[in-house]
Amino acid sequence: MTARTARGAAAVTLTAVLITGVAACSNPTGGAAASASAADSAVVGIATEPETLSPLLGYGKDGNSKVFDGLLAHDADMKLTPALAEALPEVSADGRTYTYKLRQGVKFSDGAPFGAKDVVFTYRTILDPATNNPSRTELDAVESVTAQGEDRVVFTLKYPYAPFAERTVLPVVPEHVAGKQDVNSGDFSTKPVGTGPYLLAGWSRGEKITFKANPSYWGGEPAVKKFTMAVIKDDDVRATRLRSGELDAAVLPPNLARGFEKDPARTTYAAKSFDYRTVTLPTHHKVTGDVAVRQALDIAVDRKTMVDKLLEGAGKAAYGPVPVGSPWFTAGTERPYDLDRAKKILDDAGWKAGEDGIRVKDGVRAAFPLWYPSGDKLRQDHALAFASDAKKAGIEVKTETGTWEVIEPRMKTDAVLAGGGSPADPDFDQYLLLTSSLGGDGFNNMAWYDNPTVDQALAEGRRSGDRTVRKNAYDTVQRELVKNPGYVFLTHIDHLYVVNDKWDGPTTQVEPHDHGLGTGPWWNVETWKPKQK
Image (tube, rainbow, N blue to C red; front, side):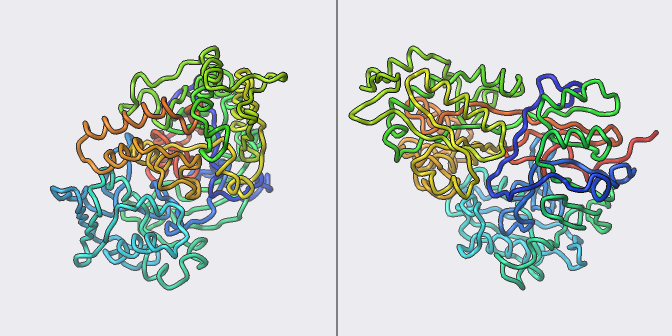
């Protein structure tokens, strides 16, 4: 997935969901910058930082958490591999029991032994409704988790949840530390103890997070001894500091990455992703809840132009959470741009153009607000392009910007330029995004989408272990989104990184929506080796 040039590479935006505001790195000569030239250190520029470093509160749930390990991990091809478990789980014939044999001799960074009780504590704590973990619903299938001695853990599921093993990349924390403090307010969030390849050395919020190699890591002490993530929100500043040598690597949008095309000392890494941008169409709004309006907007948007102009070719048109080209994508559900047909759908449904060109039906004006998070230039560009296309069909979209604290209370009735995407399993995106039972549950089902056929298909898809049954179920979901779109999916976005050529080992995975901290070419930084001169 690497390329010397940035052509066709990624446009980048980082999620603001559950992310605190950040500022550009304030010290141009010290701190993160000072270590960039060290042979055994790496300094990478990212745009956002996590709110917490506690897996109990959601950190690292998709793996690659550096301080922690899960029972399983993903390799470069996104295949599951053993981590704290010594092998992939044994699964019962009915698909409801997963048994993990644990790796022996593993210790936490404070020297205490890792064991089954830590796994049980981690999962039980996350499942506790009193724990402020926004991703608890991802473990909904778990009925119980129990230890069988010190080296075996058994998960019993309420139903046979096909992708459950993918959920066990979730980081494991030490009961003897995290269990002795308040899970929501204790200092484990900023002073984590794990089994991972790195230890937290320091965290200056809004500036940098610094890790140091764990000398007793069960996988072997990393050759990169110091790993710093410089938090630099501004794309231009990040590119400037990469060029000046203050950074060894950075996540960049394509217009800035092009400036490094001819640099013989750096490589551009283009990572394919499941990262999408979509417009929510709230069911509880008189305009966006109308199926005719939804259908019209779905074909009134010019996705190709968005890819060409906004992403500079670094992505593809999106018709749902599953990207075109994925084996889970349903052929025939592509929606070509067709403004004339969009207008006819609205005409036939009784939405007639007024004197100003904006349509009206039963006294209701075809207008609604569209929010996007402040500071996110790419979402802003998508929102403005969507609004322009909608106006051509006679629908007025007023773009608004604000923090997530401002946006979230409005999501029941106001549209949002949202993002998401997970390559791990089709259930991960579609269930949380579309099942009616999660309407209004935080950032799950933001559109309050309610379609009984989709609900049934989603349940079949997650409960069956038969790939054919699952494919048929997700085909049904994607075809239903053509009939009644609860969202207008716009683009899938590639991610782009520029990295100094001083190590052997950097590569990329297929990436999720969330990226920059746990994903990127440094997803496997613990395996990097300095290049021999």
